[in-house]
Length: 528
Image (tube, rainbow, N blue to C red; front, side, top):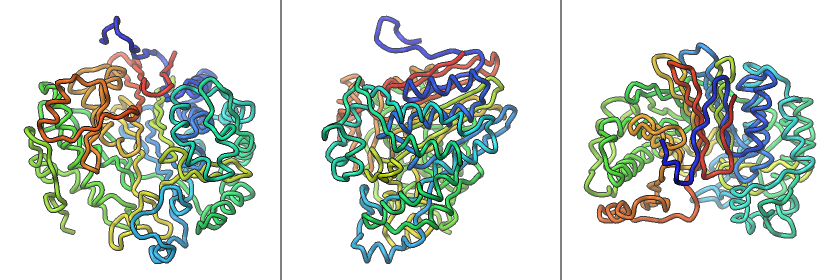
């Protein structure tokens, strides 16, 4: 239990149902749906739709979505992949012809894959929801049309993107006020987006991927050099996939399979499972998670891709032999400076949690990738388009090299904890590349250290980046920083918090729900 004399928050306990999101308006919308008889899927989509309006830097209907859904009595979750595909014309040769040699620019039309979120919402709602799109989207439509109050963390993120937002006149017209980001406490609206949400409420998936909304998105993308067609948008679909899992000290941790990076979270947990994490000092825990991150992310970068286009060796990556090889690479006395040749070789990515009164549970994530995605807005529909295609490689022969109608390696990953074949906790961590590390660290905080949901989220965070830098928040003990530097870590004391998270944990004996929401964001958990 936290020290009640210090600033902080307690976890939320609920008997019947709970929802946790990164924005209070989204939590309120989801809770209202639950109390009106809606189920976890209804509430999750309603809450996410609100966040697509009120947290526009983080998510939007022009982004992608993944979900893990556990209906009452399920022995494992249903996994849904709602990530979009590259346009049919997006060949490597074409991008080279356009001068793209090293990577796909983040704020270019070539970083825009066909958005998959609405396809995912539609499929999940049709198959597992209980309410209509019209009822579920009503709160989001209200905020987009009549305005919402900008919250503190949202304003902070917005302020950092002004220069890039100003580069596109359609984006600047909606997302800036007199050339500046809206301030916390001010009112902002998105009337064009409201009209698009109304169309989706009335016409579902087809209202987004065909007709005038799709025409607007394709015309905008083409006007800035994109290769997209109406055919690309009409072909968009989400699909059910088989979840992957690992055992962590008696808990089954489930993830969506590649093209998502959930497998990386599982590899990090596999490495941690060989250490007595509970007995380690703060410096040792940070060091261990940093080394496991560098090792796990190397393997992610080498192998994770769209399995329809590449052989992703999932079984080997999560197998005991590979795990032992990776674990042996960890030196607890010094920071590793790994080369690709050091690694074993296979020889052949907003987040919310919801549990409803019936016991159905969903782990749900929706994203634009980077802040405001590609910064490209379709002017008539108000749709901000994501930048997920930036994750593609442009190196011929790489498993994740761009190809027509291929999905890129994805950082957004919903997680789900089961125990003994029973759903325990939908959980997730936001923060782009950080998500695999964040999930593993969160699960370790709960399972190894015995922290409650809120304590596990509040704990200081670190992230070993692919640039060889160890990012650290300002809340570690000073002795920890000194120890890490002595072991060879190059520290970057970040100004911006690392990631965000939500979780709802059901006590398997009492059925009581314990929910937490990350204080690094504006949101909160709620239940009844």
